[in-house]
Length: 538
Image 1 (tube, one colour):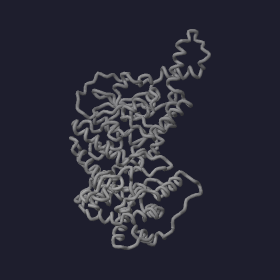
Image 2: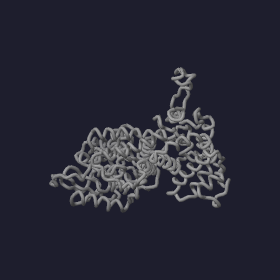
Image 3: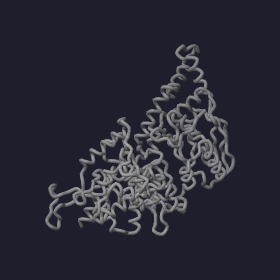
């Protein structure tokens, strides 16, 4: 039996086969007459590049990414195929132009990946992803290829056996065993069984959702994205997570708009997801949004986009409340506001605070905290919406003290967040930061008990009541040690004394101003936060 993917598994252990079957929009109106003939099965040989079936085969443009199977599941499917075991039918729908996969995309993609030796890192995948293959995707592909070779055998191996078999005129080649002959017979004769959906595009879409809510059910986020695929936030999120590459969900917009969408998505991708995280952590150059290769990455990104597009009148609007975007204007507007917020947090724009991710967005063991990230994002978004410029000045005035508090109390902050229900944690951290800033600006000291009271845990958590870890030196403990040592030696801004994220966000400032005769020599230049240089100093 083929077991389908666990929705909670990390993508670093999931095989990305999204390039094996192209996507297309099956909802456009066309002549419903078709010259295609239905068939009862698809032989493996028909899934090779250049075959008529592959040329016509498509996934619905709204279907989730084909990356929900582990290497073990890929091997399991191939084992069932090569040994003649039962495999569930693939379900197809015939449009006037294409053969759409309603169910069975992973099954078809696995067989095709086997034939092409492309488990997410081959020529076909490189073409789709614009040669931007993440390290997680490459590792999963390499692991899968090794397992397939050891347990199943590469497609090229069976092709060489077939060639040897054809050249064996006496039909008595001792080099080919009976077991191998049996598998060769299966390869040449067997196909994946096919069932057909009858009806128009609406019937096909209804069938897709009915089928995909059973067996391998879409999780709530996937269903929300698929059902709202023409709204600006899902389009923007998919563009950003893939740096404007992969399937172009925005392809129906005018060319000048698609180019801007791709450019802005690439910028946001770099601001939020570069560089890729490697464990244990050995650098302070960390991505603000955490790893793009984990299952929660798209949720964090969507939350960030929604927060960035909040308004004073409506607050944070739900994804499905946005109108469908038929021209691209809605998506461009969403991306523009998202860049505005991201550029306040990081980057080299003049208003950038250049927040250091290791301090503001990562917990004590070097694990990215979505609650901390979204808490900061919510706080800054609110102040931008309110046009509250004084907050950023007040924040900068006490930034050094604030950061020292966050660094020295990381264990306590992590415990505080864990004490709250998950959906409330971002708001708890947002309020905690704001109250710390307010109290420090009043000239008062902050104690651990203050942090507990600010977080609404007075009487529920005692200062110093933080559990210590085990004696094992894990990757998380190694990361914790590195971050602690590295921050002790990290550069700080000479204007606010806050930490500098030198890889992403710095400004080069004249110590003696130009108007006062200052020159551009190295001994008259200092590295600062862009905001400190352009707003505080000026």
